[in-house]
Image (cartoon, rainbow, N blue to C red):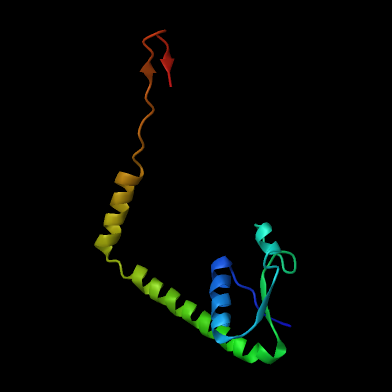
Length: 121
């Protein structure tokens, strides 16, 4: 088995598993179950999940990975152009809404208890 790719998160891993299954490429995910138990810093060979394939399927699996990563890059570029297309008035409106609606916090109310005359939070 040859190391092919270490996905960044569980979603990428699930998508890649389905892509390899659709292509008929058998894979092995190193630390598949154990890696889920250890959250936090991803350390190679301890809890980082790694997709491994056989030597004979390496070329076709690499093509699947490159196609998948290319699609991710295109989607990120499209997202950047969408967020960059806000006009100045749109940005001003968003700042105004954030200041007006985002910073409004209800004050703390104190009520008097009728029974004992003390103030209770």
